[in-house]
Image: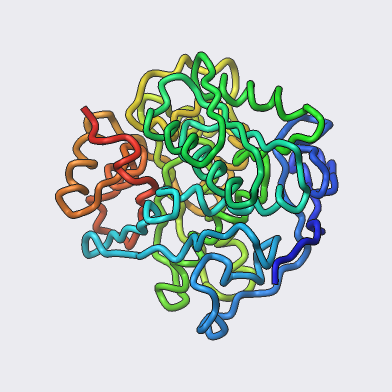
Amino acid sequence: MVDTRVPSATYLCPQDGARADSATPAWCCPVCGGPWDLDTGVLPPVRLGALGGRVNSLWRYEEVLPLAAPAVSLGEGRTPLVPLTDRVSAKLDYLMPTLSFKDRGAVMLAELARRLSPELVVADSSGNAGTAVAAYCARAGLPCTVYVPEGTSPKKTEQIRAHGARPETVPGGREAAAAAARAAADAPGTFYASHVFNPYFLHGTKTYVYEIWEELGGTLPDAIAVPVGNGTLLLGAALATAELLAHGLIDRRPALIAVQAEAVSPLATAFRAGADGLSGAPDRPRATLAEGIAIPRPPRARQILAAVRESGGTFLTVTEDQIRAAQKDLARRGFFVETTGVACWAAVGGMTDRSVVVPLCGAGLKTGLAP
């Protein structure tokens, strides 16, 4: 049965404690302008033994999801976990319906939007989040505009158009596209499907870790490596590990290894300096093959840095040459992955001292082989 009820969870600002009903179009905290967290109340545990026979998608973890009985699902989730070495395994999230892990969060945003019935959905993206939001809005029957920075892969903008959404190219980089979307978000009847500001997205990406936990029989690896731009997969992983630990379903939290491109690595720089957040004007971003994580000033920077530290993890950076080599290496192993999606393999592929899972986040068809 399709659920038509508006959500009961509450938006909560982690900075100043402000609250708002998540059934309203308030896309950011009205006090500080920052992104929301989601107060879901106490969630029941997911029991490993109860999962048999459930739907073969991320919706099988219904106990810990803020929405239920979706109308917009495309069967997202449940991607394979495949060993690459004795210690490193890859989760093939490029096998999602829109060929990237962003489907995990986009389905939550589209389902939320469907229940709120806006006149228009807007999003901003360097490509993958936009293609995912476009696809799920098509499934929901909602008109959609996606603001993308100039230089976005033509294959990604083509995919956005194919789903019936309108890509709006914005001069400048990723932050310019975000600013354009936020300006449009305040128009009456508009729902801002922000994978950065809206916490429903994070509650979708946390299913990545629940799937690893289920696949490994109720355990997690020593470390989880995640490419980090805006940090949506990392923060989802932090949510999941905290929930699993609180419910007594794991006895320790794995270290979160955050990977950035050396060319655009503001969080790695802040982490190494011992800073709690970013300060000063952002550096002018350099070009990088890892376009999906080329974020000079992520709005959730403080949360990302805190999550990595609390897990006992660290930040690693990779060069452009390492990205090129990692993409070719994975392709020779049978996995054609886009350049952003190979960053973690470039960073930890040679790890031998502990078990680690890396996400292969997007299909190589989205960007082609790096020059």
